[in-house]
Image 1: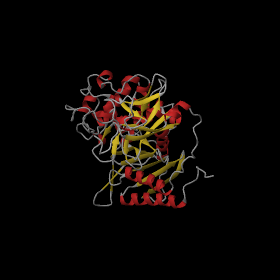
Image 2: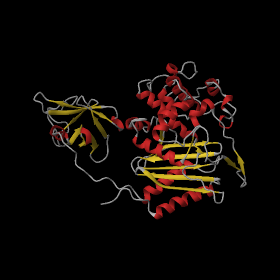
Image 3: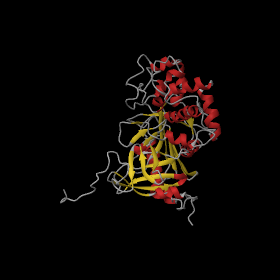
Length: 459
């Protein structure tokens, strides 16, 4: 029997150490710390530094920039789950007078609200937040750069509005809501809005010389929900585990899956944005997480649900080291070298004979599909031969099924019976599926030619 709790192999650990060594050297970062979580625990961590004898570790704080947005999104989804906010609500309903009130909460979460990418000058990341005391100072005279809902356009002011929404509905500061509703339940005691030792200092490295300059670490004020947080590699791996599985003390598994569902396509191939989460990949490995940067710091956090692996990379340099790419490559090293051993096949705990009778071959017109019974009375529709629209379906209390993905996401699949109780056909969003192609006597819209199928020589 294979153990699922094995340590990483020595060659895998060396490959991970080699990758961060190259990243720190080529990215000319004063320091870099990284860690990998696999199957429920930290499997590896490592660090590189330019200071001899003084390396950071997985408990050293770095600023994580826009990874903060994912925390803000969790707070908003909590409001939704409690019935205090609807994702289709216009912002104006909860936060009137901003000038961006026509945008919906959903659009703000997915960066499709049409707002500008940045706040008006001066550069908000390198100046104190007290220079922008009001939302009007963050949005400027022209908050909208695109029509709401028409395209993905990343917006830091958009997440500032979401933080203010949390404060307006909760009646407490964003920082207090964050601490009470996320950080404490998940045991993320080393994630804070201000640096707490041990922490790295932020540095800029000259593009044409190996010399450094200290970067300011400003309190972002009301823009904090867009990028304020400091955290550690170990704390971010705890957060990654939550993003993979959910935690009923914070957010259900279903709501976390919703965050990982693309809400708006971005303008680069193979990627998208959910509700506070970036999504990359396509037919192969799909990763979700977020990148982050503020002057002096870059960060990346990625999770693979399929492989149950997460990786984080944190560095204290303004630019030059692609932390998000490094984190993705660390995850890829583990997946390629030591792919997850799947759980053993097991039969369903019980079976309903009526459901079992629905399985097998079905036809939509002349296209052939298979229908399989899955766990929890679910169904899986798959085109035979691989070409066509397939989907997984979840069973509902009303005796119908709801599509979970693909073309049929949200559509209803129901069983239509004859007067004697036997199955006549399946109805999927008005499409009729029959046991035989254009089965005689079935309820195929438009009817079935009474003369049936014919060959070339038949009139």
